[in-house]
Image (cartoon, rainbow, N blue to C red):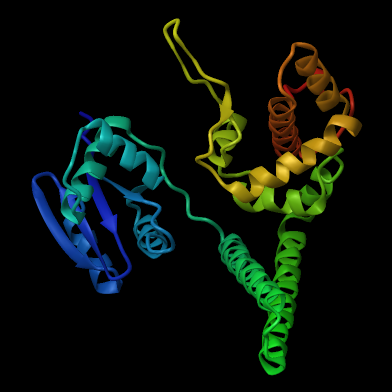
Amino acid sequence: MQTQTNYIGIDISKSFFDVSIGEKHYQLSNDQAGFESLLKLSGADSHIVMEASGPYYLRLACHLHAHGIRVSVVNPLVIRRYSQMRLSRAKTDKKDARLIAEYGAMTKPELWIPPQRHMIELQHTEALVSGLNKQHTLLSNQLESFIAGGMLHKQLKQTIQKELAHLKQLIALLSARMQQIVLAHYGQMLADLKTIPGIGKKTAMMLILISGGFDRFDDCRKLSSYIGICPRLFESGSSVKGKARICKMGMSTIRASLYLCSWSAKRCNKACQDLYERLIAKGKAKKLALIAVANKLLKQAFAIAKTQSKYQQDYSKNICF
């Protein structure tokens, strides 16, 4: 007789995490002692569900996985939408843990697989580079505004310029490290993706990073939804006819990169060119057609990465691009 799965919900933060097991609630420290306490509370029939709360969930999830506990990590936005569906107005860590457990029991989410060490380093480095780029942009804009005011002290100007140079040097150093990791572990995949007309090295590296070397997703539609480049219709009955827009619940950086690639792809990528011209001929807006091209590029990248092959113009006849 098959035992019934016991879904455990965890709401995790930097210092502690709340655990919901049936009607019981526990609060444990987010460290080794708390991890061991959770193992004692969990049984062989346990399936633990938690949110992907920044970097705070990773150590616990890896610890549980290493001890043979089934773990699922879900997008916090999904839990927030589930809470809204339940018309839940109270928001506490205890309540959130309970909601996560209920969501797990209702949807039976996929099991989480720990990322490899080099992928974690790659993700951390990319996050740091992204933050440094924002700092560089902010400081550069501030310097411009100071200069435009005409009253900037010479010494202060030199200080800001020195900091900008330091940030630029650090960004270059970390970017080189990212490229080194990708070449060491995904060199052939990177070379294959770069054969797609319209996709450059930077976009190819970002796709490898976001998709976990294309191992995190078994369906291109899931990856498209995760990135947030899939179209979303807004229609209801005969009176509400909204425009089709992309679902902006994914990552803005890779969306912007794919959108820029679409400008080149509509000229040099045969499948993308045909799609763009077909949509324009139907009276679709250029922006919508470019978004469709970006989605087409993502499908091409997914197919090539999964089949470990290079781009061929007539390849679309064999694989759905």
